[in-house]
Image (cartoon, each protein chain N blue to C red):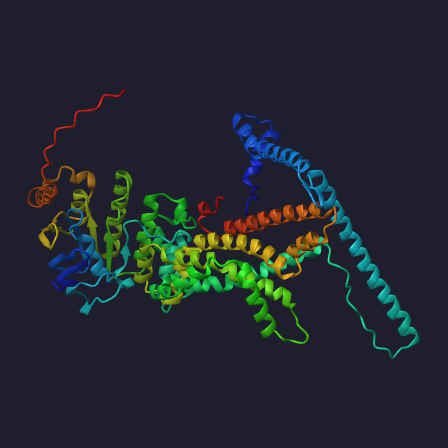
Length: 333
Length: 277
């Protein structure tokens, strides 16, 4: 039977609850709780003080209190938006029902709700886009990285290209991607929105590289002892990759994947902002263009949410890494 | 004596940035089935190169290796290797490590159940049945080496090649593993070539000790048959004159004829030490 394991950081609190309060527990609580909270409190104070001293053309720079108000307002708007949507669908169904009662041969037409997306809708769009772009990038970068790592020739052939394309900013790719998507994806009833594809491909192009490079390095650095084992066993090329190379390279691969996801998230916000694609980036840009007295506060909410989501995405990858990778020491931080 | 394995005029030259380096020259050796042969010599004398050539991991630049009338051209499970640093796959358990080898060698001959039993049998042979489901990180160095030996034995090799298998272990663990190896050799009659640094180990385990001269152009210096009867008991051997004579001969070869330690250079006068302020 598998024993239930609690996360290690909970241990000192359990000890405290059991009445064990030694210096080790005190240290842990200080490190995990007291110092971080103190840091955040100090930051809020500094922010509050600085905000009072910055006047912009859109009014005073938002302090913590204003931002909190705006966060609540955004949530409120989201709920109202949902209510309006529900009401719209209800009205539509009622209308269809009554009309069908009068006119049984009528083919009902159901229309989608077209209200403006709320802040939370934008967050959802951004998350879907970033994950799609990241998954596509991983699907390309991992196999390519394995090939590059296995063959010195392919490595020599591909390396200059990687080095040139790696530092390119998403903003430089964006116009090209936009034009290519418009030219190539010309379905009259598009299953996916063009704006979604543009953002996704831009994300893919920018976050490909860390996974590709790290996978290649992981594959090249497979220990020669293990390669010898594979040779003595006469593993064929496929089995060699599956049994020896992939597991060996997995920790490095995950380092690459985590870097890639971080880049993907940063790139996405920039791409959405410039391309006016739906998502958090567009929310920020719209608020900036809107220029009301609340705008800066709302942008600050978005900034915090963007940071928080980036952090959570990284933690998610870390959890996945801990779950999949045999070398637990590689996934400590 | 019909030889199971024959090294015939084996030579090895490496191209290095500073020119050609002849590591081995004219190595000739015949090994009979069931024989236990150790290769002993100073570090860098090319023992490992000889073993790797027999394993097929290196190709000799001169001469060749013949196993059962076939020339060795590539590595293969009939010449299983026990590596110096165990070389277990760290993401597999002890059982899975041995299983990988068994599946690769007996895929076509044995059923799944037979293969599992064969893996378990070999782990029992090295006294590792109790830790089958542990990963290499969870077991000690000696246990890892035991699993490495089980993996090699499970391939049912014609020749078992061991590259300083106990070099990294403490003296007690080493003694345990040597006893296990002697028992396994007595039971299975496997042909073994083992590299070692340890004179006592060589005398205790071997039928013949092959002593290698120092490189460059290293070759076989002397071959010493060890006529001690088997089974051998390390405690009883402590007072055995034959044992001591064998030991003496190997030591003499290593430290008189092939002494590698040059006289220490005369020490230059120390610079006057600056006084700490």
